[in-house]
Length: 81
Image (tube, rainbow, N blue to C red; front, side):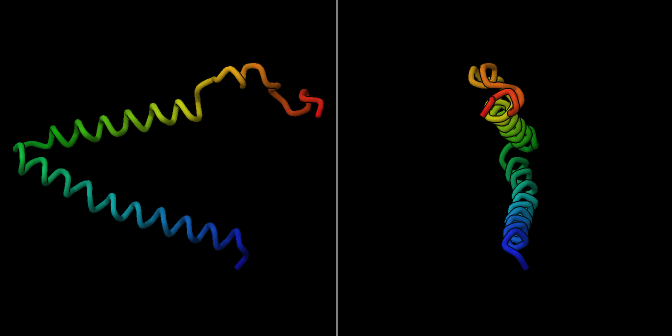
């Protein structure tokens, strides 16, 4: 197996482990919320805040237009490197 295959296998294993942990923690969180407050509303609010934070961070790091990208050439051929 080549190095790229090993890296892909390691990434897939890590992603699977995170997915398994989340699959365990989400129902536990709902159970704890229902036990503490009698309803899952608190946990849903926490999940909503988490997802809004993830969306905001994704926008900030990957989707926003920065000053440098507006100045930089759109195509590498225009860079005349």
